[in-house]
Length: 159
Image (cartoon, rainbow, N blue to C red; front, side):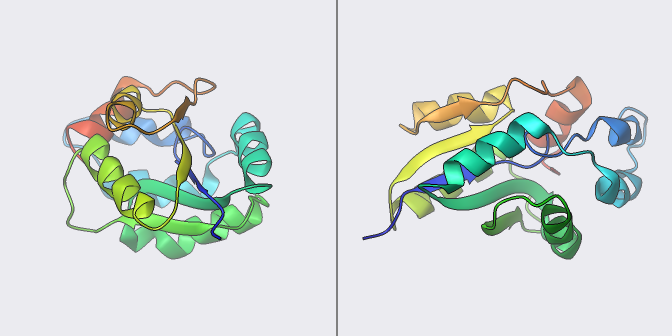
């Protein structure tokens, strides 16, 4: 029997992206610089505590709107910060669906294999869409997303 999934977002849940949001607050947005800074994201200790607790009884899946091209650096960041091991699912490099659409689709695919016990995410729109689709959600309120991050997730569909 498969353990249920605990699906955990990265940006705003485990990784503090505040130091690189200025790249998205200007026009044109500097996506290359925004993603170049991800190696320096501080760890959000509240998110780490949640991930560790969930990893005790669940298969952890890290689900992020980060583009696939950031995979190696994202995985290195997770290891460097001693985050519990888990599968990492990232947005395809050309995928521009809003985060709420992308993530609910992934949750449905995971649920076809095993129960999805919980989604941990900081984006209110993702959380609302997941709840509406019948998933249990723990909304990460320890690092509320800034307007630039919400726009990147929902309108620009880039993280």
